Image (spheres, helix red, strand yellow):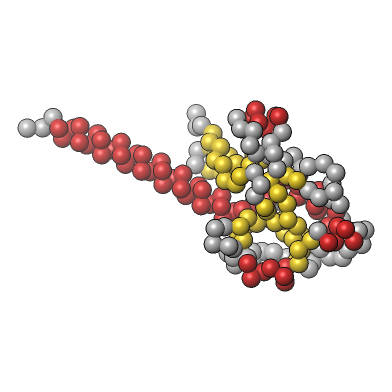
Length: 188
């Protein structure tokens, strides 16, 4: 049976930006419009990798913050600090687990319970024309790297999976070397 690993990839307080394809602003209040970031105002800060599939209408982004963990999230994740975790099983990403996401009152008076929930809330407000208010969070959410550029969460997921694979390979290599040196130690 393969074990499940929870890898903390972002800490509480980290800002994320959600990609929204706005067609028009019918039904969107002035306060809600003020919460959006226009693509042209910050696109030089976005890494080109992973954004080639963006389409829809004019691109806007919404900044949100990873908030505190709920009581249940604290029990499930064994931490009360909050954050975003990559769930890995058998070397493959199986999903994300998060604490709450803080949203301004103009969008929701309650925090979102997950990244998917946050996207649904944002899509219902800013993309009311869509039939379904879901999206691939790995592609729709950006995080800021230490180099100052914003990347899709898929970039972070792939990087963390590669790091875990490297750690496993290194551990297996060290076991092999230990066995080889033990086997060689008994020779005359």
